[in-house]
Length: 283
View 1 (cartoon, rainbow, N blue to C red):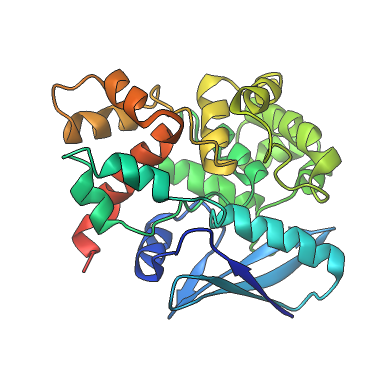
View 2 (spheres, rainbow, N blue to C red):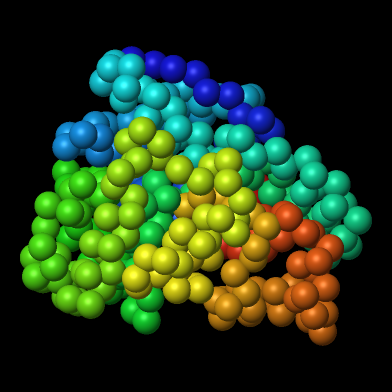
């Protein structure tokens, strides 16, 4: 089964692949081949292979899967649009960026880069819990133990385990409890509405997340940006973000830049992060 999804603003095929190469946690066991991104997705207790073929002109993607059921195709359409941020219009960011002498050359080099989100908002939540006060290597290894047939688990998959079983997988009973809380919150609407806050404000989504035991300020902001694509609140509490801004804007107060970029401040910061990761590979 194949379907075509269009991007609101043209994708940079080359840079999307570069970002995918350095984004090892957003999709479990992601593989790249020419202009294709392949991975596995869980749906109704089954795992399905998915291949995204990026259109050479950046207009969108061809989504290839072996499950032709309409319910799955609707779910997959939402998953891919969210994962590749196909609905993001980058023009407003570039209109602001061209007037910023520091950011202008960065956006020129990174033109057409859409955020590569986590596979699902729920997957972003799992990573937020596992990676808190943890090394990247340990968090990655613990996440690998959660995978089912090379795919991130769904909320239903997590809820099939009790706290003790889940705790053994990730070597942390406390975080296992937090994962179960997250799964309970996401499970009711997961398959029908993958990103249940797509049309809600960041404040509404944040309030929902923070009422989940185990999801605090950092975790909620991480899920908002990296899972749901809410770009109006940059997570400045993260030390790496503070360092990134200081490196590009020495002596300039971050608050000043956040105010300038307004509702796109997290996209501005994401571009700085992405540029730091792939600038040496841009050709």
